[in-house]
Image (cartoon, rainbow, N blue to C red):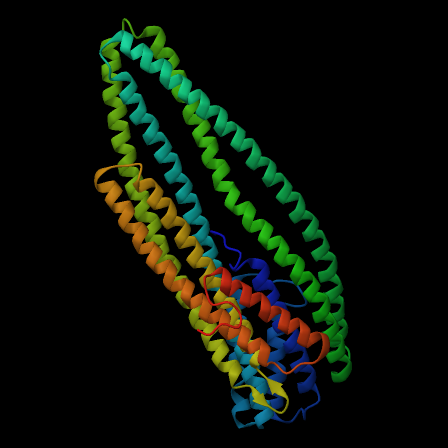
Length: 451
């Protein structure tokens, strides 16, 4: 996927699921104390067990389809709660909200695959454009009818390409060094996360065998341990996002180095034989021009493919995820009775939605920037096509950015409304402050400003 500091990652989805399962474990503890003959209480217990079965402990679901079936089965078990007490209905609403949020998992996985496809196609575009420029330059270099003039042109081209080759290789080495450093940092963070997650899983497993009060305390301890892992995962995700940005750049530089090497070889051969091969040079120039035209057509087709992925496939996945998360937030807001409060769950859904929209906005803006840069290097209909697509992507990216800001504002407001004390209150405030900063990075109002 294209990356953004505010963007959604597999780690953030995992943290969201972990926090929800912790909440469900607490609900299950509350339900365990109810009358087993009460259909509503039994339904809550069955739904809680179903949710835990989807992702036991910190183990992820076996597949997105399995998870989707489990989430839908969970909501299906809660029918008898409609005749239960207000508290039971509130608990059921909270479980339903978590299941509904879980239904965003599949479209988000689909979106991640689409983002990867977009990245691959953009890399292909860089390759085509590099080859197109090379072919165009070859045609120009071989198009001269004067041997002396062509020799001078070849020497000048070779010198320029040598400089470009040296610069490209130096930049490639620098980026590869940065990739290695980021990989080492990520590996170290992931090792710490595995240790902390194991500690968190142990606490959650212990809570399953404890009474409601002890389980609640144990779960709170697990959450605190989990938050440590969350912070490390967030750092790892940020580093991975940086690494993801570097990868296509390195690949593009590799293509550029190969193209320059190829061009230097062509120029070297041309210089040796230019005197007796003037006619052949003219034929090769014509071939190069045709190759450049072919590459330009391929570049246009790839641009259409990327635009379709952004505006159709990716947006369909975003719309599916948005629908699930908004429904989850709405359901969670109904959970407000007998000490049950869905504010935190609702805020979590809003935050995940904000992450999705922010990342999608950043991806579209990044593609728009690339299209605009390419439009300045080509001519004719291709330049117009790329410029028009860039404008359209920028408009859509801005719309998603504003939606992301709105979702982050909703999430931050929800976090600040959660009734909590001590360290929990401080942690929620810190999360809300982090969202305020994300809003500012997206161009929204600074904390405390009216809007």
